[in-house]
Length: 254
Image (cartoon, rainbow, N blue to C red; front, side, top):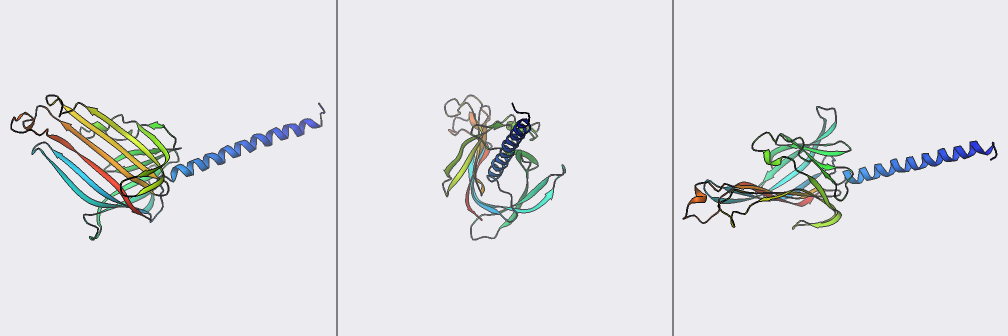
């Protein structure tokens, strides 16, 4: 080989490696940006939800249903205790469309570049992992205080991405470019079939749309105590459960 050509060959190799390295970095940025778009954090953006809640009361052996609307608004930015850029999300509530919004609660969101953390009711959840990929799983409740008996059922949940970039009809509006996060689907016995055994049911999933955020949430958790007085009353055919559930459907956003 011509010795004069060697430096040129080495330079070509260096430039080629640099080109692919830059391309890989650019591709990673694009993927990260597209993933973050499933839960955009921009001051002033909002989503309005129709909310239907269910409460199972095993003491009175009744099931109660409630309806309201919630409005999530990205209200402000701040730096959290770990020095990370974060966002405050104000949640407002109203029972009827014609009623004014009232203050309800506050949530906090942090996009670390690797995951999306959401804090509400004094618990931190890892709602998303990046990049968004079909079948990817993660421990979404890793920060939840499962030592608390009321929260113990959150222990060891495996969140999983399903139906990436698919269209989703939440029953109110159809959204393009969505991803479903299945968080839990667990059943223990069936009180209708085996009333003499304790039972429980936990189901949780959320759906996110690009440019919008969460567009659907379905959650319910109930337990059945076979030894409860109401469940051993021969004059009471009902299977008395204890727990709660909620379905949220995004109906408006900016």
